[in-house]
Image (cartoon, rainbow, N blue to C red; front, side, top):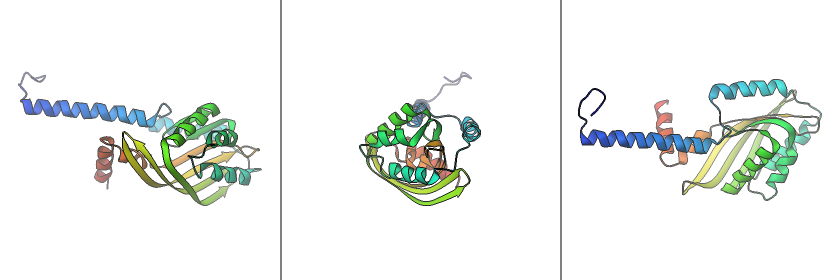
Length: 203
């Protein structure tokens, strides 16, 4: 019986239960994928603008910083990744790869180490680097193989990264512009179906 007092047929009841179950799975899966560092779109934009004001960056060691960044992110499965990440980022910084946000080095090192451990294969190629004062923009292409919810996921995606460095060539701002929905979530059972369906609806 619904809120108006009408009796709901067994078939409709099953459909309602199924839809509620799907909604619950989607919410849980999305929260798990996004991680504790996720934020709403509005808060993410505000955090990025705040980081731009707080981290003006320096031009002195940009070339050194870019070279180290390319070497570090070329392969996230390397055994020395945690140590390299710790050396690449300054004591205080802003990091957002569209999946996770971090401001503490220890948190980022742990996050990247777990990311690397979850990948079977990974390759990041930087195709273009553009300098604009203290701002550096990198256009890249990434491929990786991992397992999610028991499924083998092979992803090939493109993206851009906005970087700023301090006077020592360490990163103080890292903002990725990357379609993580297509690169990760679209490959997951249940979640992937709705991601692809939403993408088709907007075409």
